[in-house]
Length: 440
Ligand SMILES: Nc1ncnc2c1ncn2[C@@H]1O[C@H](COP(=O)(O)OP(=O)(O)OP(=O)(O)O)[C@@H](O)[C@H]1O
Picture 1 (tube, helix red, strand yellow):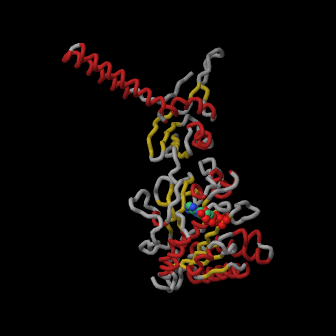
Picture 2: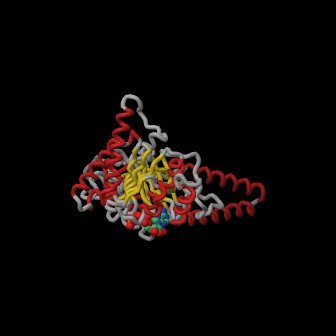
Picture 3: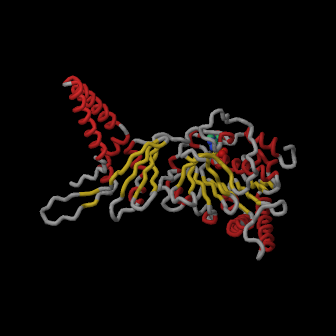
């Protein structure tokens, strides 16, 4: 059997050589007593090292890798020359195991004909075998798969908007009054953190965003995070926030923050149709003159937030209103991006029967979902196999609310994120400090 251990034997050989030289030098200088001490220290250190390695993550992973590779179908049989020759096998080599914040990265070299998906499809099984919280797979270069093993969850503690984007900063108190991020931005907002500690920034200008998550998944923290991030630009007149709040339990709390607000079905559909009319008028005005919308007081960036999209597109009993809402959302999402309209829609159930327009939302966020199949419905085919286990997010609010997966334009792999929790007192502070037309 062919053993593909991937261990680099050069370093141990250098160390052994150095110890032998030390042993000879000690023998020459101090006699047998000196060499005995060197030999004893060497044996003691070797046993300690072997003991440490045996129980370390790297030791466990390397020892168990051949069996794990076999279990997930990575072994390849070498060709045999004679009929009675014993079969031999090869499996992908682990070329490096490196410590990372909250875990390790394991670099695997693929065999000919294998693809990253051959490993990425088994990340959940690998996480169980390695006894770690989670494993992500990515392919930094051809023929290489990087398995990121998370020993603990870096996002298991809630944090408030004041701590956003500032992981580990000393002295940051989560309940500080919300301050204006400067300068006023309209194109994107910082909503929380990614699991590598970097800020999670959501692009809004030039796209539409869908947030899917079961009840209690934390969709509110996305809607309020966007509101909070855009308020300075809204106060400067560059952004308008329109809120459609069929459930009346979410956005109504800070309704003074929105330029337009409604929770009535007919009124909400009219708001959507108004947005379509304004969008068409802008497209007419811009045609042949402007290629990219730049917000101004005359022509602000309009963010249409809908707390439960399905209320208008699926559950609405009035068939006429339903059809009008569907048509308006489809028109806005297919033509509104370039003229300064963004639809930010939240929904609990991403199935096609409930939301047949989901493909018109280029950016999607999967918070906690009910079933594994729903992850791919939100983030695209194969997202769950690549580690977006949104169905496994903890239902305990402190641990899992606001946690989700997003896809970045530049990376095929989904990224795990957590939104900052915008509490009622944060919203009160926003209303107090930012109410449009009120005291700044
Ligand atoms: N980002 C977060 N961090 C920590 N806890 C959060 C976060 N977001 C929400 N929560 C907690 O989870 C609870 C439910 O959140 P939220 O109301 O936003 O869920 P939802 O997805 O909007 O649910 P529904 O669809 O029923 O309105 C909140 O009351 C809060 O306690």
